[in-house]
Structure formats: structure tokens, C-alpha cells
Image 1 (cartoon, rainbow, N blue to C red):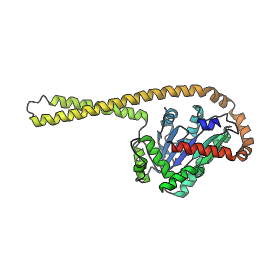
Image 2 (image 1 turned 60 degrees about the vertical axis):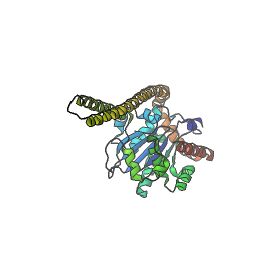
Image 3 (image 1 turned 90 degrees about the vertical axis):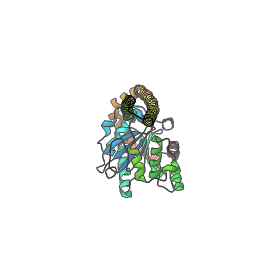
Image 4 (image 1 turned 135 degrees about the vertical axis):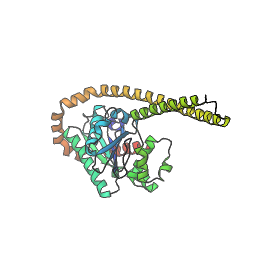
Amino acid sequence: MKKIIGGLLAFILIVGGLYGYIAITEQNALGYISVDINPSVQFVTNNNNEVVNVIASNEDGEIILKDEVENLLGLSVEEAVEKIVELAIQYGYLDPEALQNDPNAVTITTMLKNKWAENRMRERVANRVENYFKNNGIYGVVLTNIDMEEIIVEAEELGVSVGHLKLIKSVLAVYSEKTQEELLELSTQELINLLKETRQLDNRIEYLEERIIKIQETLSELTDSLTNEALTEDEIAVINEQIADLQDELTDLQETLSDYETHLLEIEQQVEQKRTQAQEKYENWMEHKEERAQQVKNAWEQFKNNLTDEQINALKEYFSNAFQNR
């Protein structure tokens, strides 16, 4: 099952209540949705079930989100998840020509304050993904968090829900300086608030550039102020200390900016590389999609009924390991 184990599958987690670089009120941030295809992408939804923010948790997520965030904002969660699946196919993370005995896979996890709403959200998105596979001629399996035994065990040992643990893992993915033990002390809403502050890579670069300019302007003003002959020695000492602190911060920010710019360049190169590598298969799928869709629809029930325990267990093991290593 090299497609599954090699990463040509979707790991879609859906949780509830969370994040972004757009300002969102606690009342409006009701749903947290994580789409993990190896690319790991998170959504925040409002009380209208619309996506209000998007963030990538890993490099593959940054690749498929490049220039796509604006297209996802305002979509329903079902539409947004489907779009991520489409992008995963376009970039070669999902195989549109997968065989019945080697299918793609998607895992869905939901977390909402209201358990009934949580179950409905999971059901709606799971159905949307399965119908997308079936209607587009793709063999794929949809799993949910209730199938992931190792994840359930870890959550039970920690005394939290599976959804809460996955939310913690999502925070850890973007706040590497924090620890799981530290985050276990936080409430769901506090975790959500942390993710609200997360920026996309492009936005982080823009923020750093603006901050650097502001510090440079302040340094210039402070340096000019030292020419004031009326300053006392104590006042000069305070200004020099401020200048030294700002110069240290400026150096750190410039190094961080350089790292981000290098990383962005790598992402842009990989975007082109991934698209090129997957282009032939993607175009072939698009050309024969209707014909293949009819074939898959006709064989869908047989495909579902013929899935072996070995296949399902391999999928569960893959997703459990992927989750443990996030």
C-alpha cells in the first residue's frame, strides 16, 4: 500500500472553535477544522459554518496553500475541505488513479462544544469527502477519530478528548517552543486564542518587514536625540541602553526575516516542482474523469464491502503514527 504509506492520502481532522491571522471574536470562532493530508491545513469557522481563517501546520501544507488562502475564506467548511482534497490531487498527495486494493484515505476528527453539532459536522464532512471520491472516480476511504485506537488511548491517559488532544497537537505544530504539558493546562478557548495569532508565511514576512522599518526609524530618532547638549549623563545612558536593546532586536528580526524569505523561496520552488511532477497524472484524470467516475460508482459498494481488515488496520496505523509524530 505504498500510496497510503508514502503519503498519497488525506488525513482530514475536524475540530471546533479556533485560530488565524484575521481578527475573530470568541463568539464567532466556533469551529476548528484540520485537514491533514501529510499537508496539514487548519480552518477556523464562524457561527455560519464559513471559513474565516486558514493556516498550514507543515511545509506540505504551505505548498498547497500557496496563493490559495483568499480562495478558501468565506467557503463553507465542506466546500473548503473539498477544495483541499482537490489541491492534494493537483499536487500529487492523493492519487486519482488509485486502485481498489490500494486506495487513498481521509481521516476526519471533529471537536465542538456541542457534541451533537460535533457529530453532525463530522458526518457532513465525511459524506462530502466520500461523495467527492465516488463522483470523481477516485477510490478512497474515509476514517474518523473513533477509528484511531492509539490516539484514543493517549487522550484517555491524559484525561482529555481526542479532539482536544488534536487541537493541542495543532498548536504545537506552530508554537515549537511550547510543550504538551504546558498546553494541557489550557482550555479549548485558550488554545484557540493561541492559534488566532498565527500568521501565514507571507503575512509573517510582511509583519517582520514593517517591524524592522519601525525599529530603524526609532533608532534614527534616538541617535539624533543624543545631539541634544542639554541631556544629562543619566539621560544619555538611558537612551544608549534603549538603542542597544533595539539593535539586538533588529538583528534578531533581520535573521528571522532572512530565514523566512529563504523558506518562502523553497516553498515556491517546491510548488512548481510538485505541480510539474503531478501534472501528467492530473491532466489524464481530468480528461477521463467522467468515464472513470461511472466505473467507480458502479463498483463503489463492492469496493467498500471488499476492504479487508488488513487494509483498514494499515490505514489506522499510518494515521496514528502520523498523529503521534506531529
